Image (cartoon, rainbow, N blue to C red; front, side):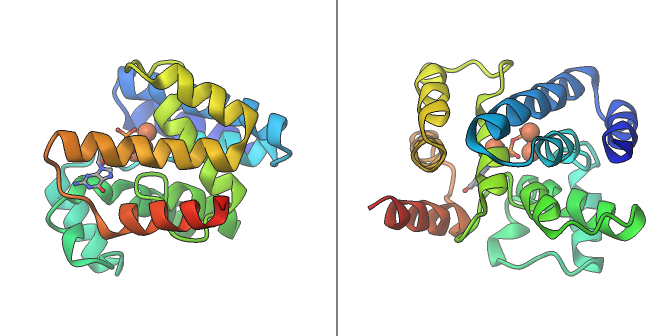
Length: 189
Ligand code: DGI
Ligand code: FE
Ligand code: FE
Ligand code: FE
């Protein structure tokens, strides 16, 4: 698959070694979960490889690009600019690499905050980003088990975990994180 190879090269050169490793971890973990849950595994791998492409641009420049590309959709986007790199990565692939798969682009764009009405591919990338084998935090194995058993439930658990973590560490909650949480909760019941 051409895109897989192209994006691997881009990621390797745009990212530090440790973030490139994380990227490979997300790609592999997403592919495994895709096979398990009947999602296109090649798309999952591509989305995993591409999800953090813009992450290491200086944040000031991320804000500038997001402004030019009309990607600032919430007032808090500029206050916590480290939530922008997914949208930037997706836009960049669409515009300069002619990637036209909307679900693939959405999965990259929404990997940090999610969004209401996420597709299964989007849920899978959001969750694989948090739980790939390189991630180490107390409840990560519970999240992995939950994701393996049930993608909807597992993704809800991931968003809930993120929300609790942000609250505990006194980070402000982005509107999209809150909306994603409520949407998944509604979809579960
Ligand atoms: O790019 P990664 O490090 O692999 O992970 P990510 O894209 O999921 O997260 C990027 C950053 O965004 C991370 O520092 C956590 C932060 N973040 C995620 N959701 C929210 C948030 N920050 C705030 N303030 N509010 C959120 O809702
Ligand atoms: Fe990210
Ligand atoms: Fe994440
Ligand atoms: Fe990531």
